[in-house]
Image 1 (cartoon, rainbow, N blue to C red):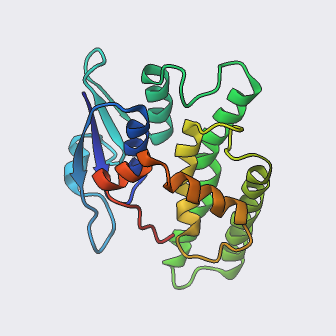
Image 2 (cartoon, rainbow, N blue to C red):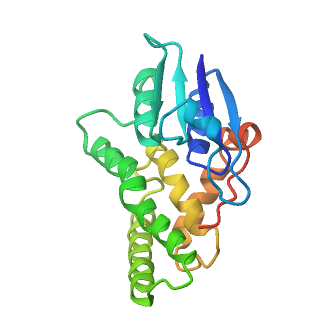
Length: 212
């Protein structure tokens, strides 16, 4: 059995979604953010020292593996339980693109979005820094749009776990609207949300209502 320590409105939504895509049995342990600070509750620190989500506990592994970091969890689940699904064949160009987007989601896309979130909460944030971050976000969205203009998914013609990972920054970027300049990205997001497994994940873990 796999336990998902699931914080509302967090990256763990995509782990619940992936488990639904893989049709694996799992249990959700729910945690709620503090309504004032948006921080995770202290109880999550009992599961992982950094109090982050997602965290999974895989009791099908030797020694009941406990694992954090959504990208690492996605790679682990696909490698162990995917049976060749949701990841292109290792050594192919498609697999290289898959790995790129799997890690781009956090290493590049979310870095700028989180910076924007923090700056928006600082009343005296310097205008040049805000402008720089907004420019970086727009450049990344343009780049992502150009990829989705020529292929339906980030790793090519077939849905993969890289799309699960990329869902979070795209939902975050679209949370405040103003996405008319990126129609292919909006088409892509609509297609992701229409997947039955995505809908089931919303039902079990709750919908993402981000405000980045």
